Length: 256
Ligand SMILES: Cc1cc2nc3c(=O)[nH]c(=O)nc-3n(C[C@H](O)[C@H](O)[C@H](O)COP(=O)(O)OP(=O)(O)OC[C@H]3O[C@@H](n4cnc5c(N)ncnc54)[C@H](O)[C@@H]3O)c2cc1C
Image (cartoon, rainbow, N blue to C red; front, side, top):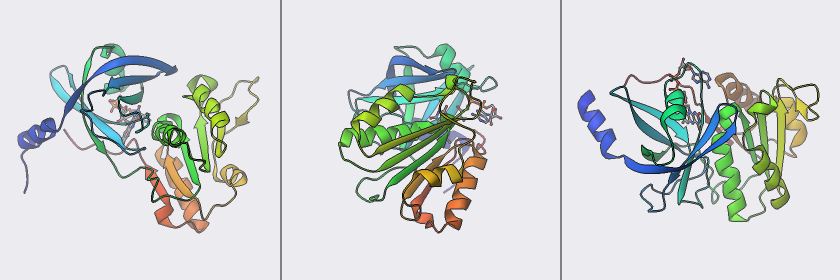
């Protein structure tokens, strides 16, 4: 059955829930978390890594965008959306300028096939991300911490400068709470006083830090070239496709 644009829009609207913003957290330069109050359980339970679609009304037009949930499913009373503002972007700018505590956000979901399933995914986890691609990974890491299971998990995160690092304090805290958790941060444009890893995150660096490649499970979320390169190298190394999950934030958008 082919739906007209109007029918399609009506169908999408029917699936929406409205949640109020309870808190806005400045995470890094141009990155904020918008915490939505789901204490009434209106939004269904998600799996860590999944995303929502939000609908905004901007200058009389309905605009939809996808955002990964960065909070843990074991805290279903809140839904955190961590959003990066792009100077030329429509929705990121709108959120920063207009969304405040008390604003109602219309969203639907949870959506997507990019998620960690704790019953099915028993291999060591390797989370590879760059920039704002850390958001679904953070949901996975927070979930592992909430589960209180000593799972082997390696988070590799590439950021541009120290001002762009998201969730750093919490992630470092989690290292002390989760014995199986390992965190590797690398900056592509570090300042001279930076003592950590430098350069773009790459395959050789990742391989040097994990015990096994072919038997690990990989989650990738970064710019297009980032995902593609890691995926190609992992496949070449003999990692089965079924152990590689990839999320792409900047796909070609369907006309609205
Ligand atoms: C499954 C999924 C999950 C997502 N999760 C998140 C999330 O957790 N946090 C988040 O901030 N965004 C996330 N996104 C991206 C988000 O949906 C928007 O695309 C993004 O916020 C830009 O929207 P905008 O309206 O501000 O910019 P637009 O007006 O759509 O973009 C303006 C121009 O800038 C380009 N552009 C915008 N941002 C970038 C960028 N970062 N890199 C390269 N080009 C860019 C666009 O392609 C376009 O050419 C996700 C996308 C998907 C598909």
